[in-house]
Image (cartoon, rainbow, N blue to C red; front, side, top):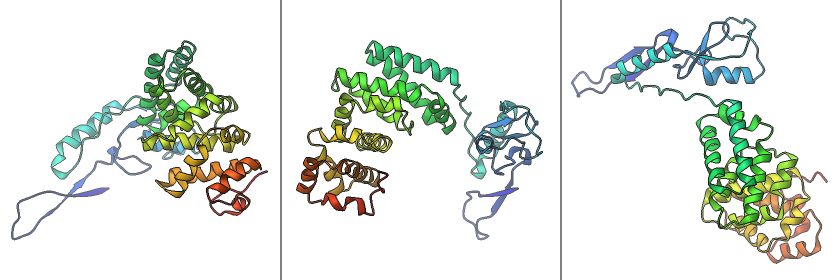
Length: 311
């Protein structure tokens, strides 16, 4: 395969000349035909880019894409020698606009995730916010490094329950004292959807709901998004928590402010979803509150922006 870059040169009467650079075939991923960034070798002996072959395997395939050979194992062995050769080639051809591929980070292992989750559970029992925050930073760092790492974290059966339990515990102690750890938990738990029943109980507790409602009033846009997304997910999983939400002072005013003064779709749409679930309770007192904000609660079910009721 031939790739072309325009090499910068002083202007001349002949104009700019286009240089062609040929990438060695063994530097290309057989699936995407792009330059290998994180080469790994399968049991078949064929080397692929890690992200591409992981997607292939995640899609349910169990053969080598090139040889069609059934794989003896799904182990992916990093090909360090080839990666270093590609990096050297990139440096040699930087005049063509080729950027050196970074050295890939080692993917997180499930055992490492379990160890961090145990630390979170331990620090939650002791209400040690500093230790819990350190563990959350590790999870967040891993998850942001790659989708594979994020999937590894989410795949741990204890993940959502442990993190939600931490939120409930620290919110119950003091939102003001524990605001940093609570914000980090909300960020990470947005990866954990759908929430397990255990996680729903912790996020649906009175202390957790009051804390999340408080975060909706934050000036931090990302914190607002994380908070309202978690609430919408909770009520979508189990509508019984809508009753608890209606008892929080000022929640209606906040949600209608988001609807009448749109900031971004990721806040407006969940606000509509929350109002829908709250109205579906057929609570007369709540219907009257909705009326006060200029909405007719009896037409919400027909609104094209709301999900259809499953009740």
